[in-house]
Image 1 (cartoon, one colour):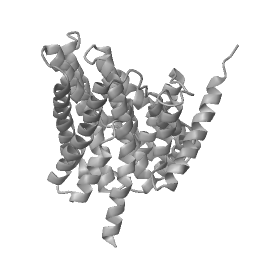
Image 2: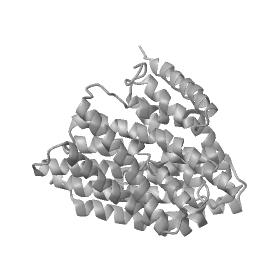
Image 3: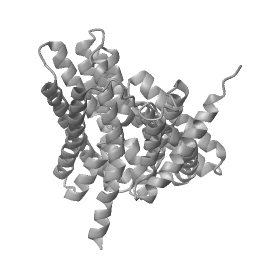
Image 4: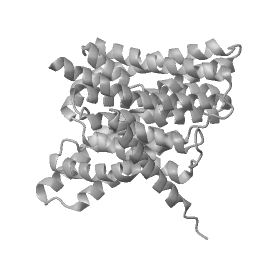
Length: 392
């Protein structure tokens, strides 16, 4: 007999994320904070009503892909070209500071007496280098701040951050697994970056042709969504680049084709808002299990969390200041980069699978992810409100 429990689970998730989203909006916080809290309440950390399943994981993955695809569609391409060098500097410092900070905080709490201990310390820093901009994207979109220099710099830096994070992850993992061919992985990433402009030229010509030679049809949205999913798949499976990065690039390739962008963006936004995004945000809370949390681990977690927040704000903020952003905008960029989301969880899980990270430490990383993910949208709103007051 078929098990239809998943229908009940989805109904609970959709209702709880929406209700708590409205509650958090009433207290002047983004709705996604409510969605994240819904996942925490429903999951093993609190009530234990909903358990993480492969179906929810897959739907959540689609949710973040849709979110990043929509962010790509909404990207101001001219602004992105202007902020490209700034994004590179912000991303580099946003990787270096957390990498060093994470390594130091591990060494402060645990003995580092062997090469395996040192590798675990460094990998702790590697986990902190991750940035999940999907949460920030949704928060900025709610506030109408996604477009412009700050939003574009955050998006660009997060994409570069992802590629740099993969490089660091590959190198560190190579020391743990002698079967990993570091040169092969680096070659794949280089090939990806070379092929990306070629694909962009072909795709832009195709959709411009559809805009100029034919009336816009519903088929265009299907073509573009299929291309998004294909880019996500190829990026992850063949090149080792995160699927959400491929989805973002897919949207960015057609962001300057006005008619296509507007129509497809509207359809994707409705689909994502109604179903996939709530599942994604709730799924982060569902991953939190605090059983077996010792006092020593709690102290380590608190220190890890402080370092995770400060190193992104200081590192990315310093990068923004070096690239002539104002102090306020540098702070906003730093805050926008603190969310670790699913990216850090994936990196931590890979470290655990490779035997580099102890399974006992995993709850600390999960809690760090949850808190940084909650803090990013909470802190962004007052940060942008200060600008509005200053302008009056």
